Image (cartoon, rainbow, N blue to C red):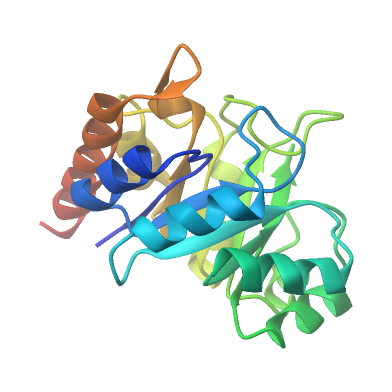
Length: 210
């Protein structure tokens, strides 16, 4: 079954809606953003979630020692590196005993072999926009993602919504999908959209297997 991450969660209620709807992971943003949370609030959200829902911290160019503190204070299971982190940084982050995901901005064809050599569990492909670290709310050409998804675990992001996630899954066949603004109304997580997104993702997976 496709893995679904609901990102940019800021409160326990939204996290529990995502978990109850069947989300595999919840994303907590520590980088500067309107969805940013501190470690104290992130810890409360982590503690509220049931077992087997992955707590993912989204960070940008954090010093390694600060990354370790965030992981411990927020009780994270995984980190999503959205900055200019090097392969050496990724390898060092793995020493903190968390799953490491590297975000990659997509504006054209990608180097499959270079991405395969990254010491990470998966890459998250997101739409490139100059000066913005993800969260664009815009899709990219999914054809660029297909070769990567065939070679390694890919989490597809960028402009996904309940209306287009099925087509995205059919096109790319990723390991997982990631959504934030696509399940919001007026800048806040919308329970109905969260449920609709996860339902659509599941339906697309079942259709692909039929």
